[in-house]
Structures are given as C-alpha cells and as structure tokens.
Image (tube, rainbow, N blue to C red; front, top):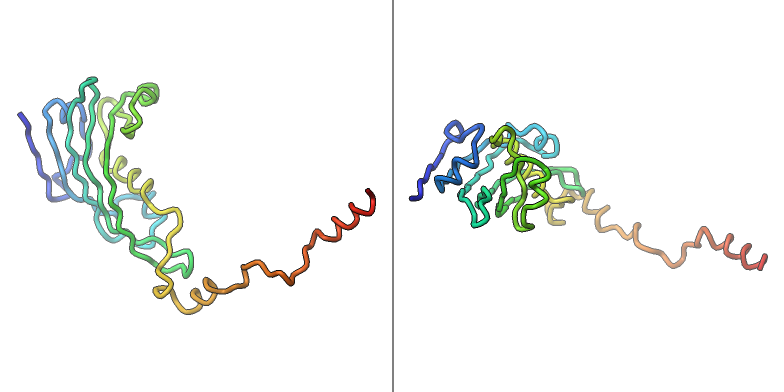
Length: 182
C-alpha cells in the first residue's frame, strides 16, 4: 500500500527524516526550500533569491536497500565569468539515492545510486539538497555573448588571446643555443 505525503510549504517538509521509515512505507514527499537557507551554496551564487523544489519517492529495492528516486529543480543566479554579473541558470537534477550507514556501505552501492550517509538513521534534508545543488552547478557560467556588458564582450571576442604567427617564440634562443652545442 503506497502512502503519499505531499508537502507544499517549507515548514511541512521534514528537517530530518528517516529514509528507512519512508522506504518501508513506500512514501513520498515534495516541497520547496528557500535557497537562502543554504550557506555553502549562497557563497557561490550571485543571489540567494529563489527556491529549490524537491520530490522524492522512497522504496526498498530487491536487495533490501533503502532508496529514493525523484527530482530536484531550482532557478539559481550564478556569476558570469565573462562580465562578473549574475546569470540565471535552470537546474534540473534526476535523483537516484541510496541511503547507507557509513562509507563502507556506500562502496557496495551500485553505480546508478548516489550514496547518502545516514547519521543515527536520519538524514538532514537541507544538507542533502544543498549538496545535490552544488554538485549540479556549472563549473563555468556565461551569459550569451549578447547578454554581457559591452566591455566584457569586447574582451571575450578579442583576438588578443589567439596565437599570433608574428610573435617570436621566447624559447627560440634556447633552441638555437642547444643546436650550436650539439
């Protein structure tokens, strides 16, 4: 018998949850969490405005592992590496989580599950969501070229960084000296 628990407001999402309980009851939860509650994440974002939306379906798999599948979405503002201004980025992460007791159990988890270590049988939801968002952020973010300020566009499209055939190789003198010694 499947039980569904739909949480639509942040304060109805559990702060801590026992994945074993949710998996044994084949429960689910969903809801939103404000981005400004994630300190590590906010340190790398251009703005802490917005919400993360999470949906998880719990179950016990055929090998008696506690797992959850679902999704995590958020619209975040990261720093454009071209103009250093904010650029919006849509995150959409498919989650396949395996809940384990320690790192040793995590090694035995199949590759299609991301391990989540339970502390005393519980997981802090905000910490788990924050880590998943951080892992999903782009390594380098840019506006479309037309979205950056004009100065940044000038430098981004500049050919100053391109190889120039007329510039002498600074090591050519060394190559000549080495050739003379041989």
